Length: 138
Image (cartoon, rainbow, N blue to C red; front, side, top):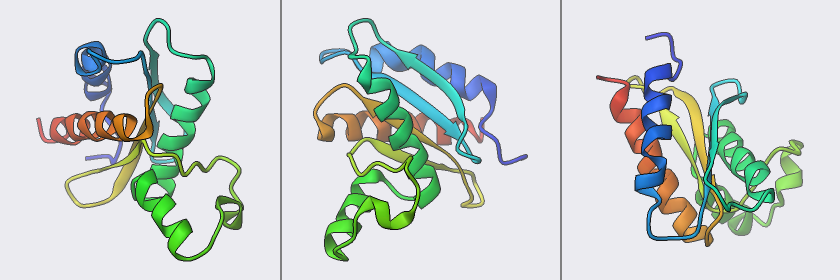
């Protein structure tokens, strides 16, 4: 394993986005690689334009912090910190970012979803990240 998210796995997740997101407001998904660069992005029709940047920021934060953005938010509150304390303007503490780990436990990317309520974004991001993780062993 070269610690990258395989292209076929990315395509599988993007192909499943509409089905996985059915029954709610339109969303977009961003996937970043282990360096934080955008590896894949898809926005469903009707998703607000601002959601794209938010999804990418969530994915990036999850990858950099190697935790969900919900957990990052909880840490900020618990330790009385702000995202600015981490000196990275790309960070977001909005729910909906989930890291992707390979079979050795190394963080190789992040998934971010935006367009719905934070809890709904987080649930969808977790499902999509799970699909990516499962496809690493296919």
